[in-house]
Amino acid sequence: SLGNAIEVSDLLDEHGADVCRWWVASLSYINDIKVDWEFFRVASDEYRKVRNTIRFMLGNLADFDREAHAVTFGPDDAQSVDAWALERFGELVATVTGAYRDYQFKRAREALFAFCNDTMSAVYLAATKDRLYCDAADDRRRRRTQTAMDIIVSGLIRLVAPILVHTADEAWLAYTGADMKEDDCVHLHLLPDA
Image: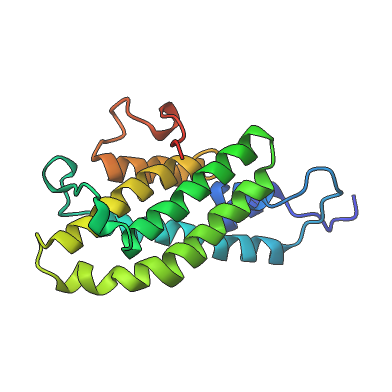
């Protein structure tokens, strides 16, 4: 009635539904909710970090065929950065699935953002970028990294799907090579196991 509210249609036009959902997931639903355009700008920046992390991994799987190129991790791989990333991903899966089970969407969202921003972007993707671009296409180390990325991005897309429904759906289609006419949708798949 004071004319100082944010119209939902304006918000969706400016930031899109997934950014709005990302922001809503950041809220503690037991407290009063304050709304400001700046909150959505921050949510938009965080959303882009998650989306771009998924996008980077998908882009680096373009020449990867799961059936032909997947590497089986053995004892010699246990100390690799790839094994480290998979272990961190297992921890993420446990945290996020537990948070969803307990309706703690803020905890799930925070864990997803920290994983994409810190674990993946700041450490793992930076550490493996050279091997992805410079190693021979069929080099075992490069294929091991692609195997880890394949496991992580498949699970990550499913983990973000309850919050970033449209982004996850598009990413899943890119990951599987399906098109919109097929019945394969990320929302028909289970969350990954830790």
